Image 1 (tube, rainbow over the protein chains, first blue to last red):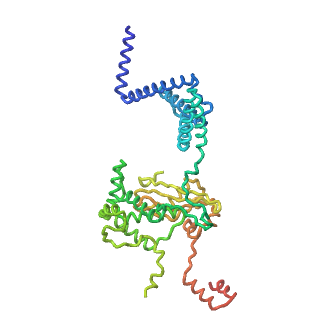
Image 2 (image 1 turned 60 degrees about the vertical axis):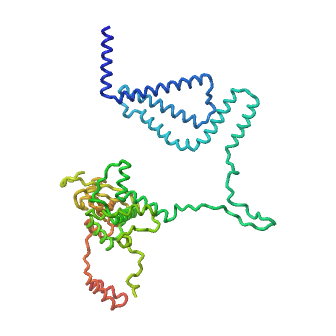
Length: 327
Length: 136
């Protein structure tokens, strides 16, 4: 009696400990138990069906069979892993972890195949279900119809050329032997590869990532950590353009294992940029934000910027004989 | 590997590492991260590279064309490690050999060269050689 009472006391103490130390553990364990109960009931119903020979999988789709095997071994590995963890044994370097990762990788890799085959598999399983349902009802007429349907379904897998759009009318089809030139149907022109469209896309992307106002909003919305920069204040447009050009040049130089000679103009630009690190340049840059985005850049409106449009900070390669041409 | 003199460590990183069998050398892009101090000297970099790549002769290591990134703290340049000294002397341009101390600069006075050239302008043919050997 006293032993039983002592046992109950211990149990109560243990429960109190677990409740205080790890409330989440209790919740997780409860979830696991619920899941396991569900799985057990499903497995029991499946085994009952198999015993009654209602689920023949001998001539099934080979791909699905392989997938079943994979999933089964994955579940087995999981259970063993959990067992080891529950008993307090170390899992470090045990082959079960490796096999878990491998199977997971396989499953991820066959996911695109799955997607592609979905339509076919659905069709086949529906057909199989239909056939199984009809087996139960031994009606001659229904059977005949079913067989015809089945055959039609099988033939329905091939591509249907009648559904294609007739783009080109066959040549020389004219009446009285008059030649009729082939009429090609209207083709949709995709503008997404033209230089303008590509540039616009790049510009939008740049605005989203570099414009300090947008960047702040996006970073806030995406919940990113705050970024600390070397420069004080916001970076001006000219600075961003300069940095972009510099980065492009660096990449190209590393690729070719050479350095381009530094021109006087480049030295001048660098000096200018280094002077203007006070962070006030970028203060007035984003104020034409709203107008530009609304107008969708129709007329390349600066929004009334007072600076004259300068040539980009590159080398003046294409200026031919500037000095000589002055008459 | 922390520098003994200054607190912040200097980090070396090599990228685009390639073994060039034709010129019997290894070439790479060298990135040096030196926060809080100005450029690292080339001799320091050569020492470090010799340690990293276990080169017996640090004369076979050439680093050049270093450029500091905007804002300081990081510079990028190129590096070459030759298999042996003969290959280095054969393939490297003169100015880099001079920097490494493997060749000496020939001091050519421009005036002397121009005078010699003008003397040879007066003579025609094989006799020019005598000017180069006698008076040059």
